[in-house]
Every structure is written in structure tokens, then in C-alpha cells.
Length: 403
Length: 222
Image (tube, rainbow over all chains, first blue to last red; front, side, top):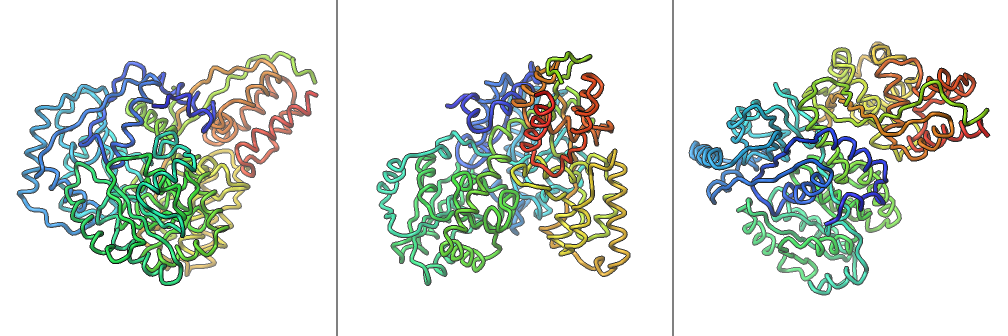
């Protein structure tokens, strides 16, 4: 695991000095993160990297999980889809299951932190344990157009928090509590993002029998309907009519996502007639994901909804041209025609892919601009700084705070 | 000019870090934008006229403010966008006067182009009002003379330069940048102070600003 000094060559000594200055101000506070899974998905990935670094900076940071059974996670998956705007059928029984598990966790989870940092809806009911400590709810979901029944249900809990955090401005609405904008981040030194040798990249492609004889278009994401993997296959087929290429669809599953296997099977069905479509179900192998991204000609993120879309930042960090949907946090990462191409449909995605495959110098420039943007705004060091300032904001309510 | 002349009082470098606070306020058309600009906190106006400086610091020169970018790209009003982008921010001593100027530019444009009121941004492209919460922290760096000052300036975080040049002048309503103020009053070199205060910092990237200030001081003391 890298330590904080390892980031100096990337972001500069002064940025790290700033982190130390702010961390000193949190001395003596215990920050407790709580979510529902330690593996799979963006939240677990960020916490796995961030918790050790915060501790190294001197901020006492811990990470606890809630528990839930299969029924609970089926309900939270429905909540997740509903918050993203999908018209899910949510019954009274679903709410009862959520409340029942929530109450069990209220009894069993010790909320000892001076600052309790709750991620996403699954553990949201823990706020009922609020004492004289500070509580933050971090929403990683695109709630720009949520199904009101679920959002109103959660709102009863949200308003009890001290502060709420969203990943994009469009997710916010008028709330009676302070709300902050903090984008997630990538770790440039993680196995998923660090530099790899050509030999390392080639060996991963050999392992999965992916020839590098033609351009490779890749989408890396969980097998989830909101990532629109079937739309990706349709876009690829439209491109393939004119330009010979391969499609790589690759992702793992998260332990709190019971729907993934069915989506994977649907993708396999659509892909089976074309040997240039490679579908890989990877179990959390970051180094291999890194190699597959680096071997790609274009990275696609054709999500229908997206909490943030960290795969876009990962691809841009590798200076790859990206075609991505104009949803969630993606437009924060891509300025259309400057650091990537944004699309709204299968046809739009196909057209953008063709443009990039036919104009390699334009594609290269987009990737280079994207790299600069990620370096300045979406690395873990910026994220850590924002979180530390967020913690401090719990104790200061002015707009200009002298520490 | 002797670079080793001791300052009457040392220059203590601070740094400024910021957090973006969401207001939940949004605008889909020019009238909603104007109404909110008139009533939101000064921290909101500050955020939307200065965010680009830090987030897109590799872009240069003269990054647009958020209002200019939005009316141009989301409402298709490129003339109004240019009018807003070209507001000479450095000539306004505080956020109040800057806000008044932004309001007057928009109102004047609407009076000559009333059809702009009929344009709406798509839901995904609405303008969201955000305010900037600043955290000011003292760094361990202190300059007792111009030589020290340059040495520190060469290595200090870009956030510190941002704070002393932009934030202290406009948001904290000091008449000039902290750098000019210290050079005039503690080093007693008004000529150098004037040279630095004449720089329009809005037309440089932050790194270029660092470089140009160092160059001016080096030239003066060499």
C-alpha cells in the first residue's frame, strides 16, 4: 500500500503539505465510516484506499459495516434503481424489510465516532442513534429524478443528519440541512491506475485470449442494467458495419447487487453470435482491469444513470479517449469535444466511436486534455482534502473559516 | 534595491482551501438566473466568478465565469456570454459591487433583447447555485525580506498564491493584494508594490501568476 509521500511526484510537495496542515486541525477526532460492503463498487474501492491514508495523516479513521440478508439487499437494490429514476414496484413489505434490518443494525452497530460518516441508503437508519456526535450522510447515487415514494421515505432520516454530501450539483434540492458537493476520485497509485509495462498488459490480454489485431472498444462496469451493457453491444454493432473492431465488456459484481448475474446472462445471450465480443466476468482484479483499459483504443461508459462514473476518470487518467453518456457526474469529468465525447443514445455513442476511430490525432488530444483535468480535480488527494474540510465544517458555520 | 532589507513586519503565508456548498437553488432561464444572482449570498457570487481559476488552472488565458459559460452554452446567448466574461473583475473592490455589475449587464441585455426571456435550458443543463466555503490556514512559511519572499513563493502551494492575490482582495475587501500591501508597507518599496498590483491576475493561470510575480521581484532586486 503506498504512503502519502508516494503522491508527491504526482501532485507536488505543496499539495501534500496542505493535507498535513488540515489534518492537524482534526487531531483527537475519531471519524467512523459506515457502509454495507467492503468489496465491489465505488464506495468500497474509495474507502479501501482512503482510510489508510487518512490514518497516516493523523486523522483517526475507522470503517465499519452493517449487516443485511438477501431480502434486505434485494430491497436496497430496488431502492437504488428507484432513486435513479427507474419505476420500481416498491411495496409496504419492502419498506418493512428495510426498517426491520435497519432496526437490527441500530441495535448491533456501535456508532462510537466523533464524526459518523454514513454512505448510501442501506445504513441510513443508523441516524436514530445520533447522540451529541456529528453525522454526515454521503449519497453516491444520482438522485436528480428519484421515485418520490423512496426519496420521501429516506427524507425522514436525511433531515436528521448534520450535513449531506452529493457527487454532482444536479443531485441537490432544497434541504433543511447543509449539503456539500464532493466528487469522488481515483487513486493514481492503486493497482487499477498505476503505470504498467507493455509486457504486463500483453500478458493479461493473452490470458483472456483477446487479440490486439484491431481497435478495442471497452466498457468496464458492473453487469447492471443502469450501465446499459446491451446498449453498448448495439452501438458496437453499428460501428462494426463500417470499421472492424473488437468489443470488450468487462466487470465484476458487488455483494450488495443481486441483479448482476441475470444481466450478465442477458449480455452473454446477445454476444454469443459474434466472436469479436469478449465478455469477462472478473472477480475484483484491479491489475487486470488496468491492463484491459490501457490496451483499449476507446473507453465507453454508456450508462443510463450514474452516481459519478469513476471508470471515466480511470480511463482519462490513462489518456484514453472516452465516449460516455451525459448523465450523473460524467459531465463533470468530460467537457464535450474538449476532454471526451458525450452522448445521449445508442446512435450517438456509435457515431462518436466512429469519429474517434477515424481521427486518431483528435482522439489522442481528447485523452491528453482529460488526463490534465483528472489530475487537477479527481485524484484521491483532492478527495481527502475535501473530506477533511467537510469534517471541519461540522464545527464551523461561517463562509470564511480561519483555522 | 537590496533584497536583504529587513521587513518591518514579516510576511506570513497563509493558504486557502475551499469546499463547495450546495444551495439547492437552480435556474432554467435568464430571469431565474437574474433573480437568484440578486439574492444569493456573496459566497455564491464569489464561487461562480472564481471557480474556473482553480478547477481549470491549466487552461489559459482568461477562463470564463460560470454565468458567462451558462448563458453562452446553455441558452445560446453568446453576446451576453461575452459581456459577462469580459467584466473587469479586478476593478471591483468587493463582491457587492461585482454582483451589481453582473446584474446590470444582464438587465441591460434583457432590455435590448427581451426574447431571451423565452429561452429555457434542458433539465440536465440547469444552472445550480453553489457557494464557496473557504478555510484559511497559516503555513509555517514567513518572509523577512524579498529574498526570503521569492524563495517561499517558488515552493509554496498554489492555493496560497490564490488566497493572497484573489481572495484577500475581493472577498476580504482589502484594497490590493496582500503581496503589494506588504511590499509597500513593510519593505517600503512603493514602485515594486505598484508593479505587482498592476498585474491583472485574471488573465494568467495560477502557475503563470507565480512565475510573473517572481520575475518582477527578481528584476527589481537584481
